[in-house]
Length: 429
Image 1 (cartoon, rainbow, N blue to C red):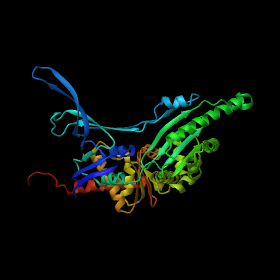
Image 2 (image 1 turned 180 degrees about the vertical axis):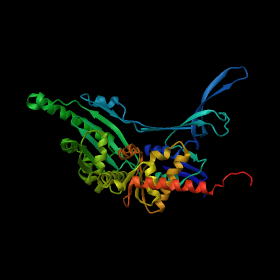
Image 3 (image 1 turned 120 degrees about the horizontal axis):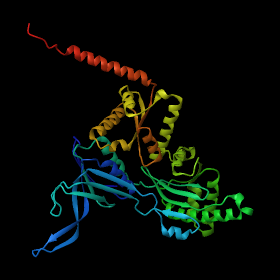
Image 4 (image 1 turned 90 degrees about the vertical axis):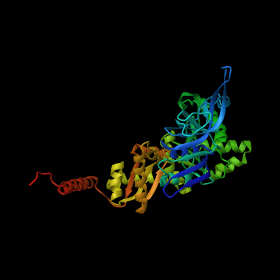
């Protein structure tokens, strides 16, 4: 993301001009743009002109439109089918992601004068890469939104891990960046059982086809030549990953691909997972090999913190709280050591609800606590969303029932004081 222009005063009023460059930038914009914001971006509108004779002609015009946001939609493609890949591997089915996999659509009424579009007309902006987007927040920019802008404009981002989650005959190719996990490709090749084929010849032939299909897909969908790619992960149940890695090394040597051979030798990490599904990436990010290699990355940090929370929940539940109400109670008592919060909560359509989460984050940060913002496009963020999207690891144990009882007593005492201070209405003496 490029920061084209920015003006935000001390009260939070102002605008930010951004230029998205890739899918992750689209995800940042999705998290930045809220209901009621004013967004200006390029658009194509069909315009009809009526001549003096009464005939009409229609043509498409490219213009810049400002709309007041009423709806924001983000779509990340899940590797649709590709006939080219299927042609290259007739024994199995495969699918490939296009170059641009994410789409961002912003809808709302037109909020500024334009000679082609009347005020109040409903329009949907399709945000495009390398096109400037201006965002102005009616309620002002809060600290979380400004931090998101700064984070999105850090140079040198991109995919840091390429992962192949595989089973016998199946493989999913994934790219992990700071905020997103994209499944760029899937393959499936039917593999007969060993016992059903005499001499296992049919099984071996099928596995050879699988390895060849996987190699071709890997070369196309994992950017192994990128200097920003820190690790190449082969994850599987059993020992499938060993066979896949050995087949990759053998084929790279046979084809004389020295760059791929070097990347596989220097960057490969082989990890055991419980299943051959993409959600097993959570196990991958918790593995000691990955933690040691990627300890500075955001998504690895998310996996470690979430694992720490679940372990605390099992060992000392009084130091592991979750749910908005309980976490606020812990924050009021200065007990939070680490706050785990999903970015999904900051996309709340109710500005008052979003403001409460912003105030919560700012409050615990002022008390010295660590705040970890989870991306709901990572598996760890999706797991946190299943726990209401917010949790906390406390610095000292608190009993939920005792704290709730204290709150009830405090409210009852406050009510009694109000009744005492309220003068009794009475008659004239």
